[in-house]
Length: 315
Image (cartoon, rainbow, N blue to C red; front, top):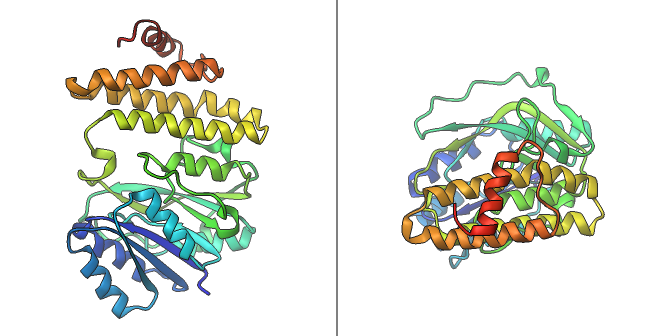
């Protein structure tokens, strides 16, 4: 039984995949398994995976028809045997000490969640510098939601790959199938469990700027609908749990951030899709207002912009 299950969804990433898998084989922590979900790749990703699986039995391949990132991760979770779960994106790479530091931190603090920092890079970055594990000072928190989206050095980011999760913490929590931007609803769901968490300032993950990734796709109406789906999902979870204080925090922090992102996408969208995106955004704003999920705090100018969209349907 491995200590850590590393779940890697893979779709047409032959350009980055070797670097990603190599960063896993070079880990100073060795008690891991890699659940590699080939999500219907049409390039040479499958051949690369087969090569690594033959060389190292810790690599396990699951092949499925293309179902998207959420379903690939959900499928990986079903096959994971580790005490801890880690999500690695196949176009990114790990600091060589990432798993060692995260695991050691979790065990020493009996923590269910460890969060760390990341760095945006290109694919030809120099080797990572060694970290003195004995001089790491983390911040232990009992309700990590209130660090959601805060500034450095101690924060909880919206992505899933800057965290190590105790498996028992996330049992029963799934990614929403078929949507863009699936990370923040998943992370918010995990934080609703109020896990004992350690926040680290160390950069243990290298995020590759990949122009062909989902986050760089042309703006389209489905993105707005999926934002709405994610926000509704989060609000339902916190309301059903009676976590009104936490929901109020999300109302003042996360929701305004997500609305701002959507407004930017609509403004930058091609003219032929902008009107439909605005229509979906208006529907979302109306629903948020009906559910008292608008916040005026620090958002007055943008609030009146949203009111204009609600009342006139125009930017």
